[in-house]
Image (cartoon, rainbow over all chains, first blue to last red):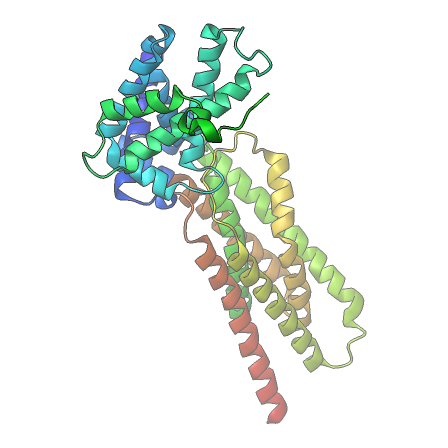
Length: 193
Length: 190
């Protein structure tokens, strides 16, 4: 039963994903999603509150659920690499989503929110409590989620074939592994006490 | 009679939009439930019409001329039409979102709120001399059919073209009351 529920949820979400490539998000109706899936409105409402909820679940599925095993093992790089491969396979969907779902419930915010959740879980499991203990996990999670969300957006909108998944991972390593001061000439660095 | 039918249809488009949106938000919606909701909605609409007729009685005696009564009635209908058009024009984009908490109490509140214009139309109809019984019957039948159809369409097809429908309903009322005004002026001139 649970397996069947999972299949139905994925099916509804995948049909929204496919519809978003062909139509503007704001023009997509629940009836269209239901027709593509072959179910009635009541079935859709059993799984999602509205189409935004469905889209949010797609992001959750791509960012967290699909990479659960690697995330549980603490392999964030592997999980991020898998995510970028998923984005690469669904580039048309991600481009449409970033372009068309803007404003209060923007797609960008949805991606960022998933990264915040991911970072909070990661820090709560693996954080070294001796490094800057004054800053809690939430602050760190929001800070790094911004960066990760930016990397995904950059990867989506890069010119075709310009930046591979591996190169994007390397970019993430390089930027997240250095502080802002590392990029400033020694003579111009502000002394922070 | 025709004028009453046209105005009620125009007026019912407002209820149509509201209930179509509601239909698109409900997860489990049997035919019986739709019929019950439509019945309650139509009864509330009739109640407001009766109140409108009653209200007009309080000031009808103070209006000296029958022609003035028609003119006031036309102005009331125009005002309702313009209000409907403005409301539809200003309406925000509707997002189909499930409403698990919709119940009879919420339906009552919704139907009272959307039937306020019916109250004014009732007053206008009284001034136009439209028979009370026919107005009540017409209002009930048109409201019931409209609300039932709206919920059926909303549930099965979703909610769309709300703005167009609202504007159309308002325009229908404005045009028809203008026609009545023109007839009155022509009678006055001749």
